[in-house]
Length: 261
Image (cartoon, rainbow, N blue to C red; front, side, top):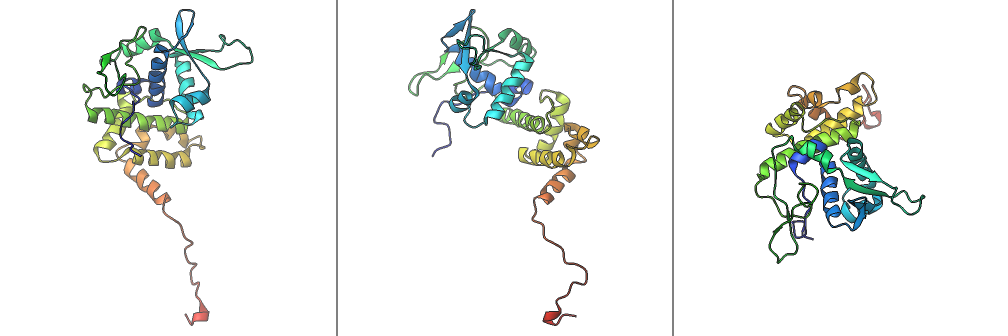
């Protein structure tokens, strides 16, 4: 099986991911795309009608249902997604209808300087066509690589988002990858040659040690975990916890049956 791109890929803008989180940005982008082609129009808006299981099976098979629920609920809480079940014919049907609050999202995107053209691939043989949104300025979800974004910058920004999102998921906190202070700690470790996996390993280890402790759990934060003077020690501690353990011999535990003395 070829894992390189031979199908329409999902797209996410690093600037959006830095603002709302990587998972949330992917959900927003795909919701935007589905809304554009939706025929479910209510009160002058296009809606997307899906259960959480349908989101998983049809859109995000690489995520668990719980991950999808968390991402959608965060977007609802922040007001970027409007969700309702009031359009269902049966009151017992609690499946939600979703749409993006483009006015709310526009207030967020207005603070960023990045803008990218919207493109959609209609087939492998057809030329790329510009397809502007009728309600917002987000590019369509199914698209080819935006060549105006440098690959190394994209990967770097998404790595920071990945680490901070992982920390938030493990600690139920809401650190923002868009915060310069937060991103600076993670970026500095990347510049030293450490990887996303190294950062997640440190998070896992310190969450195990500190999360249940009222005093220490406050230190589950980027400024502590990715501190220049502490990160290496935390990582070595994490690596040490992965080593198999064996019972050390007791003092003076001798096997006299073999003639030892």
